[in-house]
Image (cartoon, rainbow, N blue to C red; front, side, top):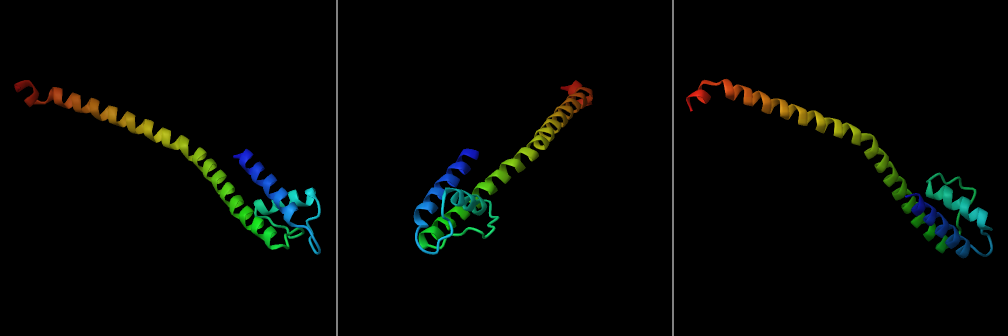
Length: 118
């Protein structure tokens, strides 16, 4: 997950640096591009750096979608990690209850009058 996020960050930084050239741009070097990509991917978006070309805005839109998807996936993994131990405990408790019920059923059947008549 971290490698995917890093790859998205680097690709978007390079792409933005390539398309944001010319008059009026404010992403001037690699440091600006990485900073802009990081703040955009995390949906912070300070606004100090932003693309002004159509191609740069396209990269920005794709980066926003990818960032939301990556952080949503990370949140899902963390939620599953917190919930999982409770599920295992409930399954163990359910198994123990079933074994207890089966034992009680055997005890009742062994003491019932119909069991000795059969």
